[in-house]
Image (cartoon, rainbow over all chains, first blue to last red; front, side, top):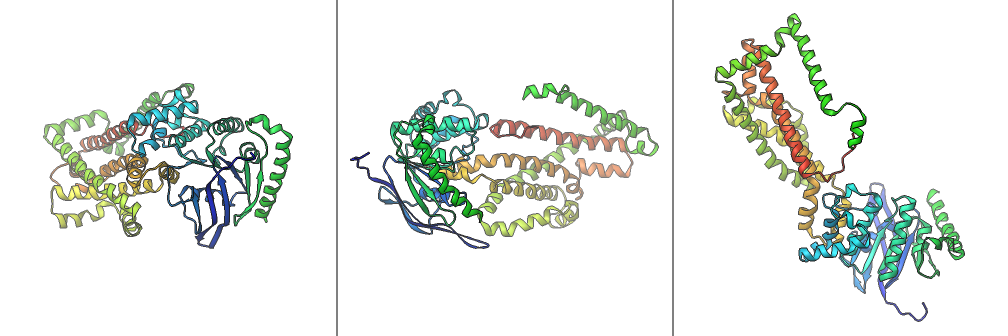
Length: 263
Length: 259
């Protein structure tokens, strides 16, 4: 990667998030700073409740930071924007719409002509291999298929950045492995900047160029680990000695934070 | 799913038939008793009772009178419940003020305040319609309100990040997501309308199924009474069936719990 110059795509500056509840104020994020480069694949790991989802929601523009700010291409993030696509853990497909209609939703919101919306949607449905299911309703699909639709739906808006909130967290091990491989292949193809949250250390190292480890509440960035394993990667990468070493390292850090929470 | 029902051996239709036959048997036993027989005469007497009412020229006018009251009361109830439910879901003050009223009035039998409505609205159709309106409104506004509140917030978030504005979110997300609850509200509202019928027609009505049942009491014409009671039940079943059809048409996308 030497000599390659990449601009900063997303930048997070001194982000603090506090929630006011009945039992006083909870600090979810306590001064987070991070620069995410153009085309970078970043994974964020940390114990539950470390504020990683909160950070994603702030980047998406769905939540507002109590203080600090985020920038996309140097432009301050205020509210949601189609340039930042989001994939949720719970799929969040619209159950009353078919697969095709779900994937068309984004282009439709951008007021594109109907035929063009369909064309775009079909392209991405094909990308995730669900052509045969374009007229099915979400209830007729398995969890893995639902998440494929959600990914296609996010892609259909051609976002510059993909924000993924534990997208494979609810899937069984085999489906998860398959979707990881598919996501890797897609990313290796078009290198869309990706901010991916997971609690699965294997998943983080397999996918990411950098793994961001967050500390227990209040959430801060504890360490950033460079994953110096070349792409293309696949499930076989998991048996690479370098992978094992990184896994042990990251796992230790995360486990310490987990113990912190348990205290 | 078909395979599952087949495995059980007895189909739903057969169960329904069995249930119906069992009801007939119980009814028959009741009709044999000395005292219960007076109240629950068996099928031939009831059919005769119905024929008598048709001959007297009362039945068809009673039926249309009741059905128009229910249709008008329910219609008004629905038209008012939908906007009120949305206002309650949207604006906290509206909810804080109105919800306790609804919860308070909902539990009072309509028969109790029927006379007050008559004093205010006079005798005839208006108090009947108003009473059914009140009862159907209570049930439906609360049901739709809770439906709107239970919409999965991630769906709204997902729509926002895909570029939806507030109008898009209302028409493309909130409305379809609320539809199943609106249908449930219609089902409960129709049932509330029917059960309020007697109270509504206790207001000095000139005709109607409910009013007739009460007046037949004075002449102990139990056959005719029972015929009317059964007719009300059948109307309820038909309305329910009608809602089932609409539901299947409009919300087949819904995940249903396996029975």
